[in-house]
Length: 116
Length: 117
Image (cartoon, rainbow over all chains, first blue to last red; front, side):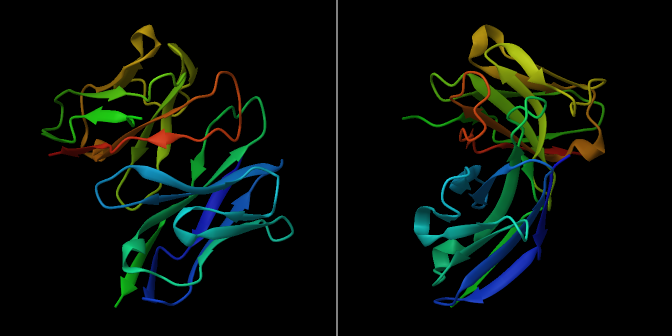
């Protein structure tokens, strides 16, 4: 079965500093990987997704993530944090098998605090 | 394009009471999902519909939870009777996919926040 681990439930960054959110996955078959963002009292919004094309994926709001098969990682980065980036971020995996269908498995989430 | 709509946004009930949540997916989306998100955790899939048929309900506590999607559009999720541990945000999502397209994006609604006292 697939699983996702997000290292660090809380991350605090200064405005203008690098944002790095870590995600490691476990899957016996090639995965599809996603990053979602959740603002307070809202649903999840897709930031970006990896679907076996380019390993460096660019998303919305200046975020990008790199798929590294050897490290089973899909870390999310943004060069310069903005106050509006304060939110909770979820990494998710979907495996490519008929049995799994379209089911997403989410990590526990990382809450980002941006300090002025 | 209108997004996924959910109601109510908030609900407070006492344990052993029943409650129902409603979801209206994005127009034309064949697949609908209900997730449970407990505070401090990622969402967990409860049930997935393809049109009005159930694709996956392996994690749905069927002794108290039920869901239906009549006519392949709107869906309702019901809990009867509710327990304290059901306090969570219930998220509805939809995707366009007909059949299994693994990279298909799921679009989420704002969720219904349930508190069971």
